[in-house]
Image (tube, rainbow, N blue to C red; front, side, top):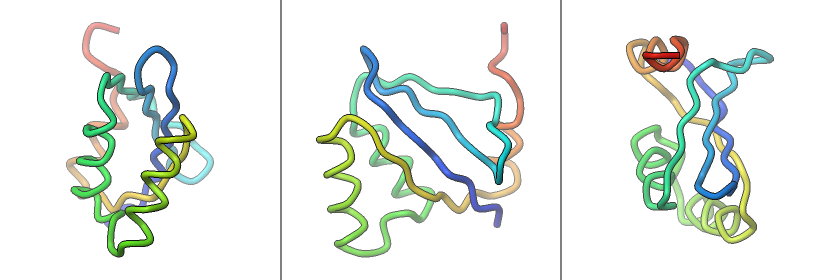
Length: 86
């Protein structure tokens, strides 16, 4: 499974971007709720322990942070394409 770094920052909404090695992937997301970030982290296998969850909560309180996701190849393929219409 590919390991991708997801970074997020509050900018009038949660701006989420992804990095594969040294390459920033073209797909970015914008969420109004930090619950979406937590859901992505959970689905991506980033919240394996209580310490992981606490670190994510602290990053959200600070307004920025990042974590590693373990994605399937189809999930990675979606992030490697720009959003339709752009």
